[in-house]
Image 1 (tube, helix red, strand yellow):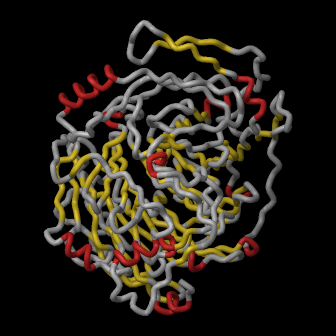
Image 2 (cartoon, helix red, strand yellow):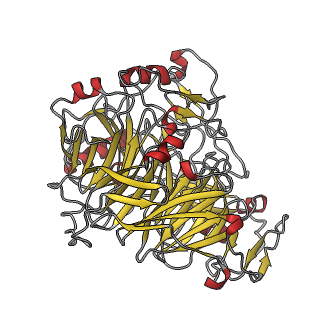
Image 3 (cartoon, one colour):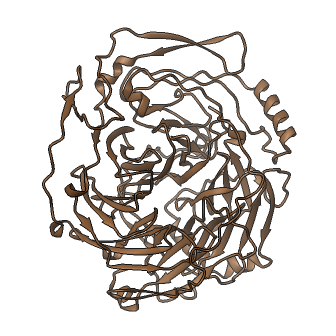
Length: 633
């Protein structure tokens, strides 16, 4: 499903600073002062001003990195097998709603794993690969829940059976990073596949050059448990740097030629003395799997063979060493395996109005190529998504102004919430999974109750679009919650809310209609125009349709599309937007300008907050001393 490709010839010229006189070094809060610890900023690196800078952090001693909590099984448990059997085909299981899926194509990476060539040579390489690879048509399923065997290579990790916490000893200050990795990774198997290509021998037109620190090996050998790694994108560059700016020069800087990076994520499951896997998404739809320790990379979705629209967010699937999820500007989500070659595919036509707004398609169980799954979530771009704390659900937001909650385990759309106005740009879960935050072009932060499936409050305080939201895990319990938001007004706002203290206005009862033929009498509010379409009982007849092979030969693929399977799937609930008088409004406890340019991200860590802006600044704000000393972290 390759879309039209585009490569930016030049970066968008940055706008003048919104607050040129802003030199903020302190954030004043009720519990104390957050002090600017350090600012990471590459003055000579031109930013991509329309997308800004996003940051990913890896801290060995962080709670998120050293504690593996009991979680639902996202990936299958594999029995212990000899190493030769582990290298053969393994099974990855997914629960799925009914779908239809067709695909025939070939790997986009050469069998010898060679480096990337020029654009002309890349096309020749793909053509020769296409001719040597057999077609692999994909089947249509007629049951609402199905298991798929999907992967060859290293087996999927087993979920932890108990909490494993790494606590610093008295010799923490002198212990090395390697000792932490040896102790924290001892419960994982050590088989790890490396990326195919070396960054020290570049033959790629996609990557222009890589600039490592002159003393990188020495710096890595001397790093301790307190040293955190920061990965952030600025313009055409991905920068790897020490979070405290020591040394001030980047540990590594990769410059790309054909597209600019838009997002990245670090895999905590595979972090070890030998590996630190980072997945990078690009404006062209490409991905780079980058192992920072061995200095190697693999390019996925090459030339947009699966999706050519811009990647808006990418995250490793929790509990997986190989799988990652990515959202795109065309409203789709792909689940991919970093160790697999890619394969083009053709999506089936939607047969019901439900499939028009949420459809999942997958290859058959014998498929050994990407994608693992394709989700068509929206007709407009998805701007962000987030996993729930128990990793069972996903919340997505997009340009259509809707926030969707999806049951990841069963791959089912649960609820759709309509925003107040404009696009939604960011989303975050509370640490206990009870509440979801969204922010967007309505200049509001909205609090949603996941358990009660309703809006709790709107937070008014920003004077421009809200671009980032995050809960503070140190100030959240079962009654009171603290969270932060940043926006294009260059401000950070802190909020406290307690559900019991909120004023609850009377809400009008929504008019509803009941779908015909549904055994559970599922009801949908009639006010929502997006889903307000005439409901029709599913046809008892099965439709047959022929589609040409994507290689353009004379053969055709016969697809069976069982549309009546929709009867077995619980349909989503649509929650229309409520008026201002029906929803409580919350006021911030802190409101302060912290950046000279529009803010992009806000990330909470145990002892500091990180904020970023559109010009490429990454600022770390240390928590008040009394706040960190009183915490259990």
